[in-house]
Image (cartoon, rainbow, N blue to C red):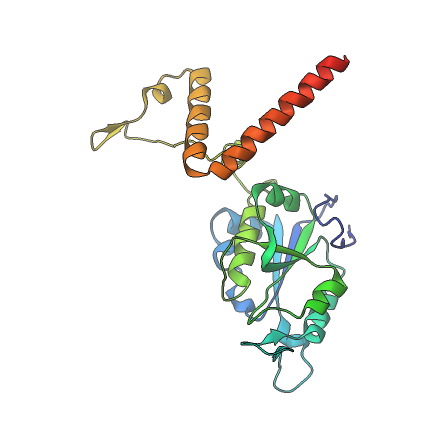
Length: 262
């Protein structure tokens, strides 16, 4: 079935689709894809047709013999800016593909696990990779393109960011991870960092696996893991811990309100 693409007004709203999840990447360097996405779980899922990937060269949408995609910025300044007409033609060529269009940009909404889950519920997405000093603002406005960042740092282009986003999303697609439960126990899934993991041997270089993990007592193990996740999050990511506490307080307030109304 064909699903109409959405604009940026509500790009995270889920849509239904029976076809494979489709990823389209617009880039000046299509040869770098699939890269690491072609190996391990994502690569196997790609081979099985769980998802599909196509990288298109933005230079194919130029109109001059030099295949120019950039020009000097109005107002002066260092570097070059990608032209709106070229980028617009590239975007127009994939306008009927399913899912939102995302421009990888340091000024965008920061990618997190909640966003990855929302994008995994889409039938696909189109990723626009910038280079140089970025893309002319007018085409982003005209197309209503959502902007997403993978962190507070600057990369040479959007390709690495696109791979990170795709990896985060693809692994959440049904049928990609061998153990579906593993995705629910990872960092950020419950607003906390993940608890420590251990495997054989039970003792290594004088360091033993915590006794509780060898006890076979599932409830004790669950409580220990929860305590460890909370301890690590408090120490390493106070920002996450503050959000987690605030969410718990909101949930308690909402529950108390419901109890009072019943």
